Image 1 (cartoon, helix red, strand yellow):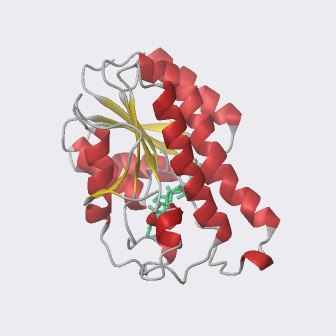
Image 2 (spheres, protein in one colour):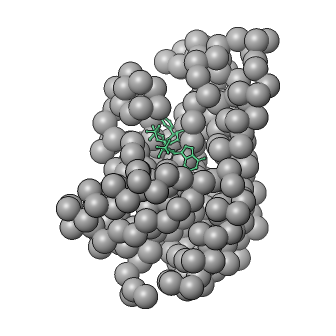
Length: 242
Ligand SMILES: NC(=O)c1ccc[n+]([C@@H]2O[C@H](COP(=O)([O-])OP(=O)(O)OC[C@H]3O[C@@H](n4cnc5c(N)ncnc54)[C@H](OP(=O)(O)O)[C@@H]3O)[C@@H](O)[C@H]2O)c1
């Protein structure tokens, strides 16, 4: 048991998820490191401990309902609640740029993690978030999921036309709004974050932003005060068009 704020982050073993864990951990928040691979998850916990972050490994494959149910049960037994859920785990599914050539198997894989994973984990963790005095859910989306930006010839990413990934993140945005509406009468806030084009394994380190920069908006939305928004989509500069 802990009196600290407790945050579960999916895909926290590396990249933006790990850096989010580090930044939240520095605020004395107890980090539950969700990772599908035990060795990678435990290694991340050790790294965080070396940075004085209180962290616990939680085996969690967001595509595996049994794994999700076991994680929820174990967190219920050990902590009885969570205060923050960050749905960060995600894949790009490659560099597809022609919707007409979409490989449906790839699209299903991308949706399993990026879309159904978010819904399944959120559903399973909601009872634990309801036990919090001020639950926060952050769905890690992408500017590439903004239909407004995807249609804007002046946008720097206009030439990117990756149907599986971009439509999956547009779905994440819609999912954010739907859960926010359901939870509007509770103390739980649900928002989507755009971390920006970031230097991680995700894009073979082509991103020009650091993970420190990327994690900031996620941390901001995870630690919103009672007067903060719900059902919003934000980057570090504020609202991103849907
Ligand atoms: N990097 C960017 O430019 C960028 C821009 C906008 C949005 N984003 C979003 O930011 C999030 C994090 O991306 P990143 O750049 O940090 O990527 P990353 O370094 O590749 O990390 C992705 C994380 O997701 C985990 N993961 C993948 N499939 C999983 C599953 N089935 N169950 C549980 N965990 C799973 C990975 O675990 P393993 O180590 O086991 O594979 C890893 O921990 C993603 O949602 C991505 O779409 C990234």
